[in-house]
Image: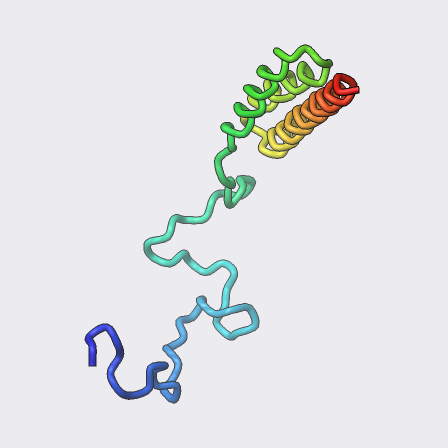
Length: 135
């Protein structure tokens, strides 16, 4: 047989073998020997001190805020309304919110919403202009 295919026998392995040995302090809750305060396994970083977040989260997606700012600036050149200026302000405020990811995300969402509203106005005016020019 080809070397990439398994030989004859059970491809799923031996299911009758005994389970691996249980290490104290490593099992799920409710299992004897489990401790929430067990020492960390070797090779893993120690837990953070109390009061600090255990997982700081992914880095902020500043590219999204920068893109919203660039789009808002380009839409400002169309001179259609005030929503483009609102988008610039919201994107700039989002870029200043480095310490609070929730506020950063909220301001980026509002900046994109402002940009989409402005694009909607542009498309509506373009459609009206085409319809009125063909009459």
